[in-house]
Amino acid sequence: MRAVAALLLLACSGNSSDNQSLGTNRPAASACATADECAGGTCFGAPGQPQVGNPRFAGGYCTSTTCTVNSQLGCGPDEWCTDLGDGVHGFCAGMCSKAEGLSCARSDQVCLGLGDFGGCFAKAAVECNVVERTGCQPAELCVRIGFDDRELGRCETACDLLHPQCPGNDACYYIRTYSGAFCNTPGTGAEGAPCSCDKCCDPGLSCTPDGTARTCARPCLVVDGVCVGGKTCVPLKINSPWGGCL
Image 1 (spheres, rainbow, N blue to C red):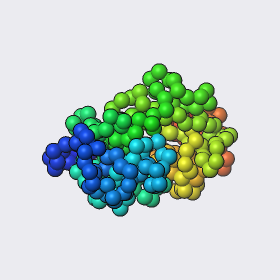
Image 2: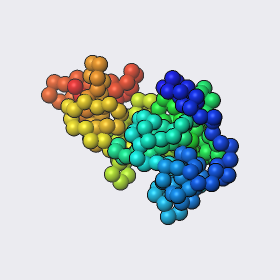
Image 3: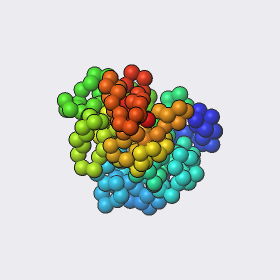
Image 4: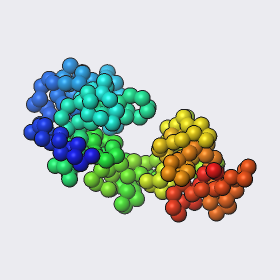
C-alpha cells in the first residue's frame, strides 16, 4: 500500500488547503451542496443529497460512486475506492496518512482508518476517546476508528455471542482487532462456508480460524469447549474467550 500511495503522490501536487475556493470539479472529500460541484458527480451528506444524515459526510462530501472497490479505478489522484458498507457499492474517499504526507484539506475532517490507509471524513463521526475510554454508555465499546490518531473512536453495542441481543437487524460478531464482541451489520456466509472477515458470516456464526483459512462456525466458550457433533472449540483469536466449533 505504501508503494501505491507513493505513486499517487507523484501524480499530483497535493491536497488543496481551501475546498471552498475550488468552485466546480471538486475532488473527493471536498465540501459540496450539490452534485454538479463535484468532479465525481456525487455529493454525499448535503441536504437533499444521498447519505444525508450520515455523520461521516457532514458538511457535504464530493465523491464518485462508479469506482471499483479496493482500487483507484474511477477515482482521482490521492483518492481510493472504498466499500460504502453494503458489501456491493463503493465510493471515492480522499486519502490521508502522515507517513505518506497525505493530510485532510478541511479543518472539519479527521483521518479515519480504512485498512492500510486513512480516509478524510467529518469530525462528527467520532463519538468517543479510545485511550481515555470516555464518551460511550456502559453497555457500549469504544472502538478505534482513527488511522493515525489512536484516540478517535466510535461507540458500538457490546453483545454476548452465545446470547446475542442486538438492535434492529444487526448481529453479534467477535471483532479480532478490538478483542471484543459487538453488534454490526450481518454477513451472508453459511455455516461451513469460507469467510474473509469477522462479520462475513450469517447471524449466529463466527468466522473461525481453520488451518490457513477461516470458516463460518457456531460460536462456543473456549473455557467450556462445548460443541455438538464431536467438533472442537477453536479460539477466534489467541487468548480470546470465544471460539468456533469446527
